[in-house]
Amino acid sequence: MSKTIRIGTRDSELALWQAKTVEKQLNDLGYRTEIIAVKSQGDLVLDKPLYELGITGIFTKTLDISMIKGEVDIAVHSMKDVPTALPQGIVQAAVLPRANVLDILVHKGSTEFLETSATIATGSLRRQAQWLNRYPQHTVVDLRGNVNTRMQKLSDNDWSGAVFAAAGLERINLKPQTYLNLDWMIPAPAQGAMVVVAMENDHHALEALAQLNDIETEVCTAIERQFLRTLEGGCTAPIGATAKYDEAQDEIQFHGVLLSIDGKEKLEIQRNFPINEWKKLGFHCAKEILDNGGAALMERIKAQLKK
Image (cartoon, rainbow, N blue to C red):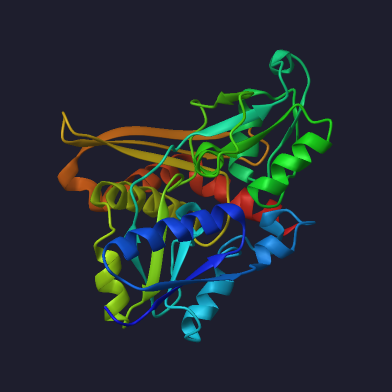
């Protein structure tokens, strides 16, 4: 255990919290560690919507390069930010136990605007589409930056509210009292989960990280990410997915959704599967969506995003 494991992370407060969480768990197992923080392109370019930046890997690419160059040994990410196809040579080494999966609406006191007109902020196509599907009379504006920056922007603007992942705000104690749980909004695949990646030939890091892995979270996030990968094929789109393990029934409860960007079209699937069928579950659910109008909808979404 003598080799120091260098932990790569983005330099936001949330990313550093995540890296320190992994560091403590490794230290408790007897491993030596060092945290190395870098800025990602997704953190530096805040004046464009994510989909215009080619969202796939925008927050992970810088750390991927640092790992391939040998500057860091492992990298810690919010799993929902990680592309479903990892770069050659990099592997998923551990998925930590999942936190709160829900999206929440942070508002400024009153929620009367839900019944009237309002402006809601989010940088996510998935959140935008689901919000407009439920509240077509509202306006949605783009919101970028780390969670601290986005909370400040909400305070500085006359928006009615902004949508956040509950887990991120809870982890760094930023969750205010004025929020609503959006339990009707299907979260991003792997939302609430943290993943650690390593080089496939780094046996020291892989052996260490294997001890942090949570099997239930690994299985559920794998299903959700398989659903995403099968639907999008490398294109970003308004896609939500959540898989839960029901211990009493020994089954997986899956809920997936694909929407048009304006929220007017919504294709949804809800299924329960025996646990032994989990490896192809996401694929089969995505194929069902694609065969029932999803393929044509994805083509329209791709055309819109190219404009």
